Image (cartoon, rainbow over all chains, first blue to last red; front, top):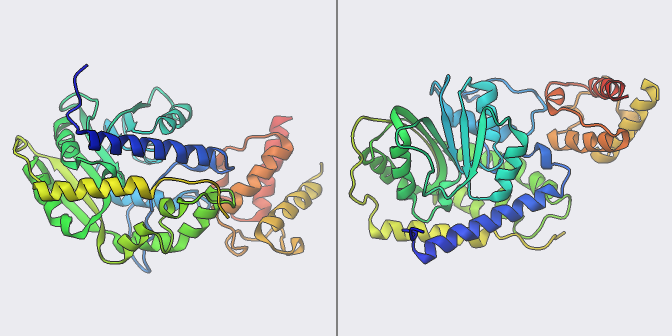
Length: 303
Length: 82
């Protein structure tokens, strides 16, 4: 067996997230919302009078904020007939929406959590959607084989995000889309743009959606915190839902974090093989991913 | 169970969830006016599914506007299942 190029610390972070997400699935599975709950993200709420992308949804559509977030990430990208890979697909809500509303071709989802992959495999038709448990830093598909890679609110968990971006660049065909959004340190937004360009991913659209994501949390977080614990939310659920006063909500609303959407297209250029993020930047991102493992550890049911 | 009986049974469950007086819920009650969100609707669906041993396709719930529409969906699903 080939030894992992990830360090022990990096592997431990991955294992920590796998345990956390598997446990989160177990908690949800015990609630009456399990079959309706297909997204693990902070969502997007349009601000007063603001135009937004996306098809109309039914008025009682569950997970509306998360659906709207996906629509803003896709933006004007034409995905008709596209083979789409979502890395960090969780319970598959995004891929379900793409199949329903965007006339995509086949879709593939990967996630580190076994329980999420089991949920997706049960739920989506195997002739259109396939799911694999995999580490995001080793995307298990052929070079130049997909038309779009989707990655929403997941990359903050990766101890080596550059390795992931390189793999995105590798698997996309020229002209393919990288549709990406996450909460990141505000100081990194410009650096991400530079790194994408160096890796052959041309940024063709982007938007800071921090106020929209913060609004989504203001409207929904507390309600979700209670619901996801069936009235007895486990300790730590406040971080999962980004409730007021949680560390992640503070990052989102306090100015330190930026929730940013990048839409990139794979150019014909080779990716620059040199390391792009500095050692200091890499250290900062790895530390942040490690802190996330601790924040998202769910305890026993609470009040 | 007649539609009226079904209406009464569901409205009582829904009133418990929303913490309102059941008599305030009518066929014309709009979910938005009742301040019911998708989590409340899932909760009442869960009661209905357990009581009548059904599984309601969630797409059937996306566009319903009023409480009466919801009772109609449940009535149809019970008829289909029996």
